[in-house]
Amino acid sequence: MTIQRISSGGEFEAKVGYCRAVVAGGFVHIAGTVGQGDTVVEQCRSALSIIGDALAKAGSSWENVVRVTYYLPDRHEFAPCFPILAETFGDHPPAATMIECGLIDPKYRIEIEITALAGG
Image 1: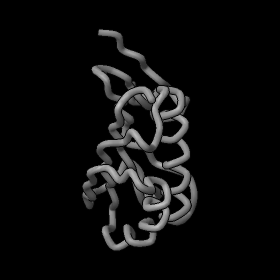
Image 2 (image 1 turned 120 degrees about the vertical axis):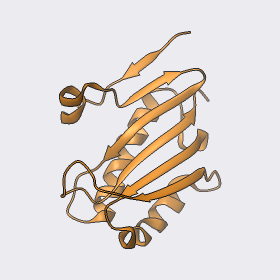
Image 3 (image 1 turned 90 degrees about the vertical axis):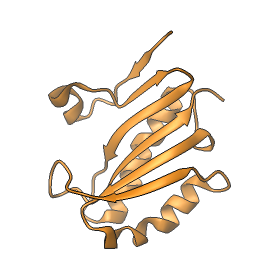
Image 4 (image 1 turned 30 degrees about the vertical axis):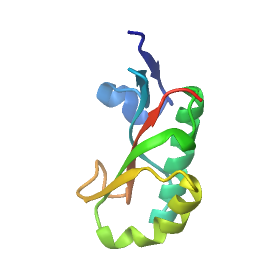
């Protein structure tokens, strides 16, 4: 089996020892991704941009996303992200889960993890 590892050059990749995405077994596995900004909405948009870049580098797309997990320290902040997520996934919504939990740094308001079909 061929495995492709994709780095985005983010600071935590080198510190922790992981890749932004791994393509293996017909799937693209994108690591939990946080974004920049002061609000949950800004961070959501930023994280989705980083994820979109990883999907493109893997030869995949938003239409191929089959699973998404959202991690938020405050579940009440999830609702402002709904329009952004609905726009991102459009007519191809994935299975999804939202988990309320602590993130690696208190400045982060949302982390997003994706699994997509590889290719096409």
